[in-house]
Length: 145
Image (cartoon, rainbow, N blue to C red; front, side):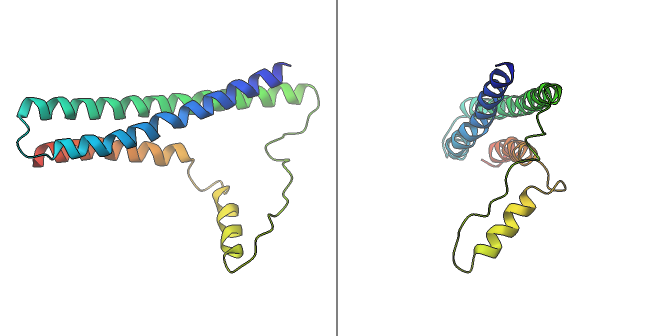
């Protein structure tokens, strides 16, 4: 019961963690277009810049805190499953190959194998970098227009 509760909380946290960056990237497309519009006054451009930077920073904080929470839940689940003798579920998942035909099957297999490699940074690090770049893009478009 406790493990199920922790897993549901971890899954909900995981979904919420990825929602903020996706929404901000969508909003950034609009904000960057507004920032580059000719005839927009300096005050309005400054407000759009501030809004874009604030939204991106908020998504960044949400993503980083969500990642920290996800790790905490995963560690708690591992702690309690160890206590009752369950195997480490994340490393004990069955590895049945999907049935794909065609030339891209080896590519798919290689991509899946390397996506789980420990030398590939976690996805939240890529999103962190993308969100920081959007802040830079906001400033660059603001200064260029």
